[in-house]
Image 1: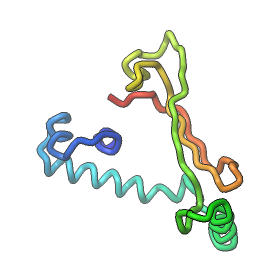
Image 2 (image 1 turned 45 degrees about the vertical axis):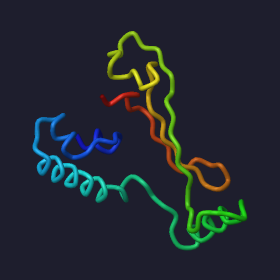
Image 3 (image 1 turned 60 degrees about the horizontal axis):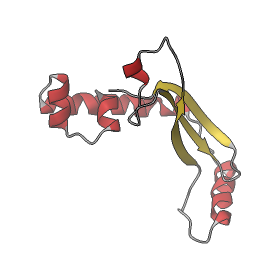
Length: 125
């Protein structure tokens, strides 16, 4: 339910209706899991600290005249097309109607990947 809420534009009432809960329970449940995920972030994502952070921010600043202050990484994602007879079509068929897995990546100012994740089905519906 939390992933559904984060990846769509539905209200707590709409999410609650979709998952058979009232609005208050949907809201509390989603906030509970977002807090739990936030507490785990430092175990999986290691951001630059100290002099490394200062250098990274300066590297991004040197790229452009107009820049976003204190930038330490750029994030993007995409769908990687796949063909699998074993995959359930509905799980991996994305909104553009082809089967895919999701790729998420973060890079530094030198276009080096500092974080990569891949493997979720193209659709969570």
